[in-house]
Length: 449
Image 1 (cartoon, helix red, strand yellow):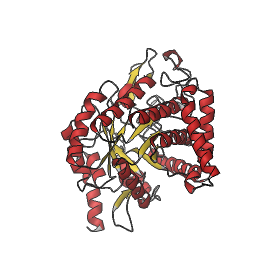
Image 2: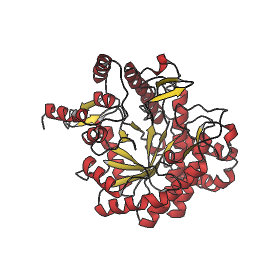
Image 3: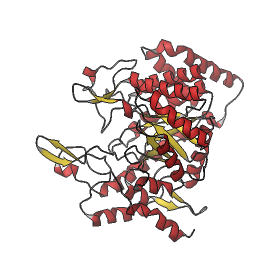
Image 4: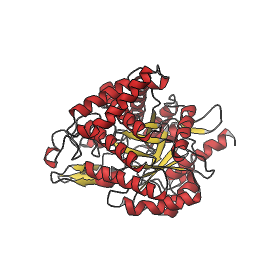
């Protein structure tokens, strides 16, 4: 296919229904911002995307496990060294525990360096009789409730690109520059176990990891993998003008890659089979995911496979299920059974966050850590009963000691939520709750293994 015909196909989405797109006031402003974006260097490279695809093919075969996590919605203000380092530190700590317990490689994907836009249930928000556009993430408008902040501003797309570049640059430096050294990450976990109220429960596993590392050191084993890690970026491909402007034709293969991130996913609200998002992502060569909620039918899943991975390429397509703790054991089996029978190579990941949100009496949106864990437990139970592979978890967390989700080892109750409720959108697990979850998932993996 010629370059011009590939480019033309990449714009086919413009003739299709595109939901959850901002209502920009001035088309000329959008054209100017998009034109500037299209001139920017890539954030990621085609070869890195292909490498992740190979890793996800291992997940689909049951030979690896995905840990995907980070902010619900990143903010421009949060694109700084300390915030990025704390998130990365938490992800690395979780990965060490899961790698040891699962005895398979853990593919580390950050919900970072691009997660600046969010779908909304309503296009506007009303407070005290004043109606303004809803906050759609820093890539679109501001969080403050005033007309200037809430104006949908296309120049923010450029700022989102630059903040993504800063974040990704920091991630690359931290994961390659000694910060991710396995022994150091394990030492952080030992500190966590010593300080956690639930720590005694984790002592045995932490002790086993310690002995394994000591044994390898005594044997003189010091592989490169101890000192750095592979790390991949991901975000929801929500703003189609942004994703299209950052799509490039790879000079080696002649194929289109969206160079805004290694892995992109389609949300539960934008996965219409005849919609713009599914069409656009069907035409790029990155590994991609689709969020599947409790109303998804097996036929929906098969139609998405036919559209997004008709060639059956291993590692190309991941299904991220977000059912809710009370629904997963009933809603998930029919999907897995029919997809498995079809022979399609799909990686299955559990998002235990989005189906378990509720409003506390204080008005804060929150989630119970117990519900998050119960959904993960249900995900494992369903896969084990069907003889398929529970391929990973997708969580919203921060490396800070926020008070946004209730429960956990250092228990947070609903009355505590106001103390450090800092999210720009949905409630996130804090560092301690995230590590609690990692140790609990490790227990599940061993129990079901």
